[in-house]
Length: 226
Image 1 (tube, rainbow, N blue to C red):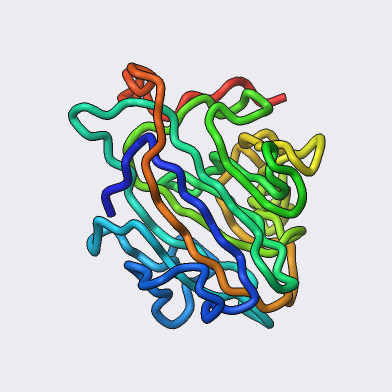
Image 2 (cartoon, rainbow, N blue to C red):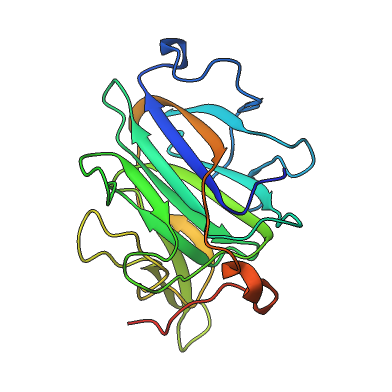
């Protein structure tokens, strides 16, 4: 999936897809997009894709999509992901992980519009994640309160604990990976059964800052964890 590196990805959460939030999506969730990297819905080879539609509800509490962000010859700038709440009781959150499952960005409530909407931007508002270079990523949609966890091995074999990958000082913070579990990849989620909701991911270009991705070859730029 070719995604402009200065794209806005908007997630429209609605009571049902029939509400017309997205007309004719390029990709409709095929069965169930899984909750892990291994069970994610791989859409890296069916692009370019500008819109994705799916649903969550009941025991289906996380949808994860595997995608690729490419840097065009004349494109440079930050990537912005947005999550806008529509009708119904579904209150979603949005998460982004790198190709190995390490946290990149997370948000619950939109830092610009406020309310139950959600938006991922770079640089993150906590200054931890600075930019997104081209590469493979995993985009996850969950209900608010269902957060990603990593697993930290204990001192003895068979021991360990699950820890939150992101830490939020406010509900509108766009967080980089600064939680206690930031040093390990996605291993589980904290939440249980949630409300039913349809969503649509809309990918559209937006102005970027020329030259910002010049450091793409160095990987994702992140500040030291707090």
